[in-house]
Amino acid sequence: MARKKMTAEQIAARVAKAKATKAAKKKAALEALGLEQYDRTRKIRKKRTLTDEQKAAAAERLAKAREARKPSENLMVDEFVRNLPDDDMFSYKNVRKWQTEAKQFLSSIKSFKDSKNWKERERYTTVEAYITNIGTYIRTGVWVDMFYGSEQQNKIKYRAAAMAYNKDGTPKRSVGVWYPDLGTEWTQEMDRDARG
Image (tube, rainbow, N blue to C red; front, side):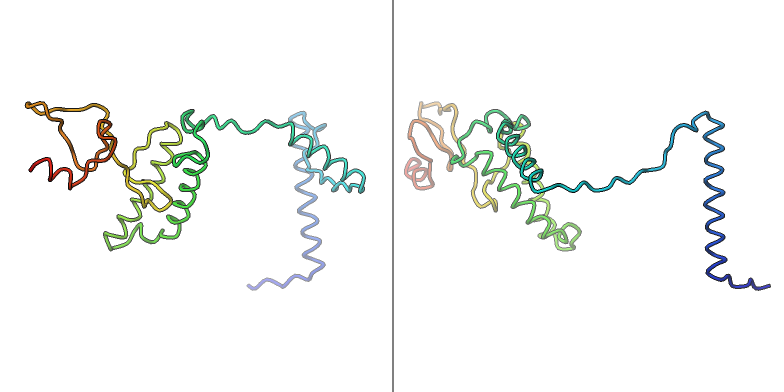
């Protein structure tokens, strides 16, 4: 048996009746709990309109508060990183810029994550690891990645902290390592000349 289609007035009357029933039940429940004095209906606040003088005064107060505010201390940043000058290669400002650029690049190659091409997957994971390593540097002050720069274009070079010697007393050398006694990096040519 098909229902009769309701008119707009009948629908409006039915909705009004349902709202009244809901309100009555809510009121009865609040009375049963002893909470009838609390009105939980949300009151909509009217937007405050400001005069031009009030706007000017508010802007002045805000400017004064901004001047009084101390600069950010960046306590989540390692003290070593925090104290580097801005023109240093590994300063907080430069490293944050690299991190931002790497994140933008990572979002642009998001499709590489599940690619069937292993080179694309490797590129994605390399950039992801680089972002993580930058975060580690900011927190600890220790650079753990082999590369640096906005596009990982520069390679980290090793520096000999302590010298090692052969049995005959000559120093041991490795190509690509900076030695303090030479004041320079040990190159392939130097290695060839030393070996004779």
